[in-house]
Picture (spheres, one colour):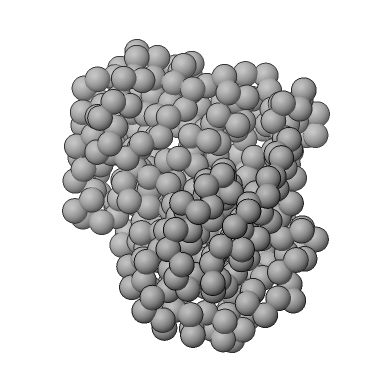
Length: 387
């Protein structure tokens, strides 16, 4: 993978993060094989549940894992024809009776890199406590994590383990995010997504293996931005949220990052813009939705200095998105649903975050050396819920 300073070593404090960004295409192919090999057991677990008209599906996780649910929610609701909600474990644990107010049959899909975060285990326990009937699909990168171990043998649980390499050693979730999101899409979306993993992998390889991409990312950051905005619609709003979090994490909070939908940005959040801002607009592949993304792109180009606004787009033509360094391509992904498009598109955000971190003299593998923020969340006190 081409990097801002050539081949990085452990001394750069970026070796894990660089490797974990670059390994994603190979891991996605492995995830595809894992889900295919697990198809019979997955179908035996999922089909009777999805067949129920009163089923509620809740996609849950904390931080980046919560954004996996946000990316997936619109597409899975449409595919399953069932109620699908993305609810962060941090919300569920703090307000379980509100988040689980309806006592209906529920499939709780838990995303967890380590499975050892306090809220990950607490969310499943609270769902069991509150709901009359709940089933658990646990998607995790750590076979030894508490979440995987506690659900491994439970009759109403199914644990789907990601490739061991996806259990990122770096501070920020990169390959763990994309692997778990892809796994859920393949497991719950069914045959509609056959072959998509290979297309996504090839597109991502064109990004990570390109020196031109490194130059265009560098050009955007040469402006020494104080603020960066990520915008997207539908599933790409969840992608925008994850993108902003990556920048905040890897720059130790020194580069202000904001995320919104293309339409929502005008309703207050646009106040963040100044002449030291840059913006990334994720272009939807849906022709209707894309019109709103194009509108905000055109508006931002009129608000910010030339070269401060870029699009990430699978459109094979130039459309209205501009040319050259203003358009960052996703090759051969025309027509791919946005939920899948997000997995290749996020690689650009990961590279922005990596390069911005290094430019600030930080160590991306651990941008908080004093320990105020940790790879696995600490300091959470779990309180008992009394019926």
